[in-house]
Image 1 (cartoon, rainbow, N blue to C red):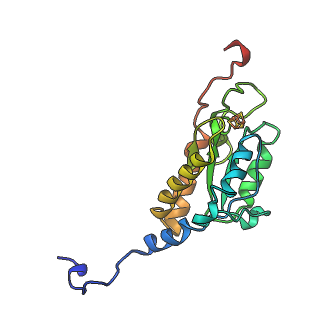
Image 2: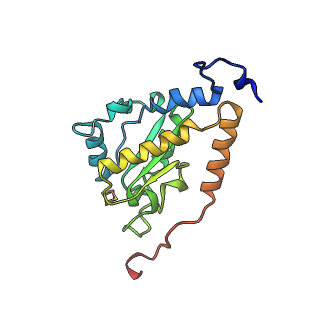
Length: 184
Ligand code: SF4
């Protein structure tokens, strides 16, 4: 028998982590940031009829310092990779990354030296959305999966440790595809 058995019905019990998660999951502020054609679908995600504002996700911020979600919408060139990392570093903690489309997730059909073969070599990714391009509904699904992750995420020092471990794991992972260019 636990404490919950002694408390009268109608009293809501939760943990601090669950309470923080509940608040955080409904207030992502994505950075205004698109790299290629996937960004058009991301724009549609914020507009009618999809209307990301229904879940409190439509406030795309012009400054990374006011954003806590990076949606990598499009292919990442080697030249632009340091900029992506800089934007990530400037974002507010705790921050999350969603990789949108095959190009961002693995280089996609651009299997060549000019493009990063997976943005998780630059920043730690929480959710991957497949497709070329993913429809806005798929991005919505990815956001819903991210909400579940955030709802159950640790807080405080545990959260920092989890983020450091996640990033270390992803940065040493090998590419999903070999770079063979047109000789593939
Ligand atoms: S996944 Fe398709 S739509 Fe998205 S950036 Fe790549 S080519 Fe463009």
